[in-house]
Image (cartoon, rainbow, N blue to C red; front, side, top):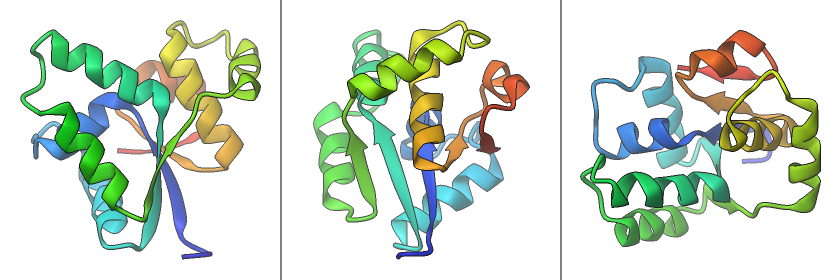
Amino acid sequence: MADAITYVTDTHALIWYLTASPRLGESARQAFGNVAEGKAKLIVPLIVIAELIFVIEHSRAQIELAQVIDLLQRNPSVEIAPLTLEIVLEMQKLTAIAEMHDRLIVCETQMRKAKLITRDRKIRNTQFVEMVW
């Protein structure tokens, strides 16, 4: 998988993939499918897991956290990326993005030279990273 495409996911894209939601864009669905088949790599920033917990606690997602973590950890094409000081400091450069978690996700995407799986228009409008939807 040395030449495989690397993707970073945001929280809603991951939730919509896991719940087979029709809200997930076709290109995003293909990207997740390529990861499932081992043809691409997926980075899940730790902030996405934290936000996922928040979403589940507020009953907006019909998924179990333990099952999601197990699914992600069992797939060798998936990496749960830690939140590092380097990423936190880098987010200072992204003032055009208002939400802290979005900045952290974009920073992770930039540092990995990856494509971001997101529908977020505010991120899309900045053109900081290449996006898939």
